[in-house]
Length: 511
Image (tube, rainbow, N blue to C red; front, top):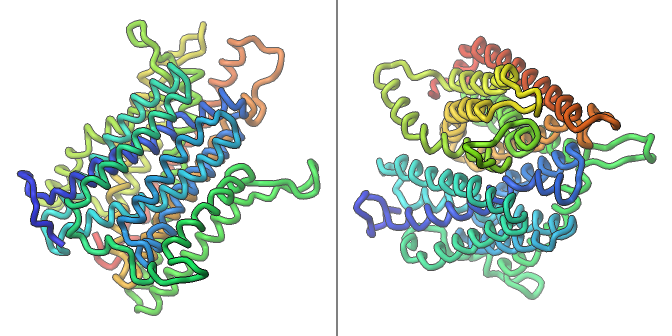
């Protein structure tokens, strides 16, 4: 519904309230994420592999939670209560981490997962509801909102990263928590600005009594029970059956695989019921979900192996000042803000002259750039300082630049594609499946990061070596893994390009 209170840009006032609320929520999320791997390795003394798997499980659950959070808001909670509940959970989660040990960290991570499920799933929904379906301002409004997300990420990967590594991790986590409280206050105090959007209030079903409580109260209390579940899934993402020499049961891998098979089956079955065209489109959507998993599993090395690589084997000294390792993650949101509007203009101009690539070709080009980014590390190795076993910082700058341009070819295009491929009666299921692919990708990213070895990883670094020999061995392992990823991704990009015509045929005219 169009808000009559508009600002000089022509957009509803509510957009800017939601812009700043989301900006601070992303500041909170990325602030915690940017420090997490280093905190696990340096403060809690986890090995690289264990830290990577915990990071992967956490980020996987972060992306899976909005599927449930959105459904509960639709049926019971309404969007406003769900977002407020999510913000409170996330702020509590950040401040729990300040307890300074593994137990408090895992409880805090659980609260952040639950809170993100309620917040992230529903704030974008309110943005869409500020506009009528045919309002020409809608795309522009979402672009402005997307900029807010990346400003929050940019602030987190600079300010929180610097404070956390310079003054202590607890100060970084505390700052992220204050950011979440800022987002909560902005959302609540500006509630009149977005009040015209439908669906904000508690649903009638949420006000019905069950077991002596109203449904929204029961859901709020039940949400607390999800925290220990997240605790177990992060800490025990796999477990031994039959002692040390027994079988390792990969719990998270099995759960996510079964979920993916179920969602893919549901989508294709629903498509078959709608007719041949929708069946083909659902098959195409499932294939794009697989491609999405591969892209993001490699892209998400940013928070794990690439951050540890920056910490150990990248010369981060700039004119006498040493950039904290976690701060190297700022390159991605910086390039998003820098290139985002250029790409938006580029797609319009290419479309105008009939040269806009098809969706499969955009995915192919995105994965090609991701692969080339990893291959930059081979170039960086040619300029290694053999006295320190460190490559220049420009290695990461160009790597992240190519990863970001690859992201811009794939990420916004993917969201738009889902809304076009799915019929309206299963749009929610399709979007839930798309978010599930991100969850699987993040966990797979943690598994890939374990391949870099050493420091408690897969054992490339042997006892008795000097510090320089350890760093040199570690550098070789990082470059081997990154260059292999790069070559595999380039080959996969070529394969997708070769499948361009069959994929387009399955999409039945969707561009």
